Length: 277
DNA sequence: AATGCCTGCAACCGCCCCGAA
DNA sequence: TTTCGGGGCGGTTGCAGGCAT
Image (tube, rainbow, N blue to C red; front, side):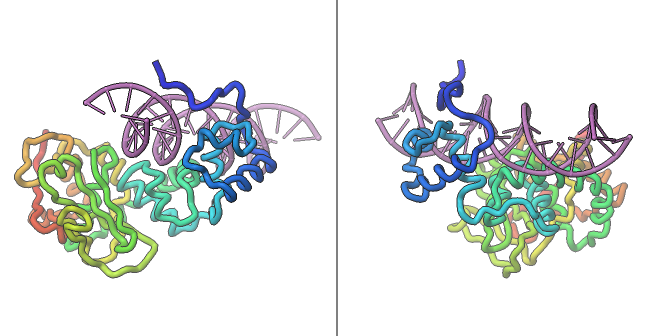
């Protein structure tokens, strides 16, 4: 038994919005606002539309300062890096671009970027091969970019970075893994504090680009190595990130130094890996 | 010029979350 | 504490325009 629909779909108009409807909605919202209730809004505004449809129309096309289409290469890169790190959290990704909507970013991804980056995925791996050993923390961060993993994710646009925290790590104790992201703004690296994030998560010491941009596809291929945080071995598998380190090493995609499998500034965090096979 | 296919995008659907009652 | 309902979000669909044949 499903929940009751928000409106009578047989009696409201559906499909593309006319310029008159747009004008009516825009005019009403500019004068009165939403009133905190989209469902009740259409009759007040004189529209024969579902409240949710009104909300969508306003948020995606009518509200001020909307920027549609015309994605730049840099934006594409950021979208891809974010998608690699947090998956299809379109609202979160769109939040990185003032004026862009989640729907627009999602459509852009589905129609253009997905193909573009899938086609380029092999060359991306080659790019990963150029990583120096000293950039191992980058790779570790990249390995945390698994959308499938139950995770908490903190973005700090001001600091040009983000923190990733597996959910059940949060349950145990706050120990965040910093995730460097490509952000449009040049900013100084600085540290998160416990008060700002509730953890000892720090930003990386420099502005970084996610170099492991084929992480999702590699994660699918790589399933026989499991990563553990020290002290949590054998616990809930859901917290652990899985991939084939050996394959990476064999193929030279990444140069890993086990002794440095620690995020650069995650304080007390330490990690190790083992083979499941 | 006509037809069919492909692509991009606007809009809808339905689920989940969260706050109010 | 539970229930209900609205908002938010990601996935999907359907249409229109462009392109190839």
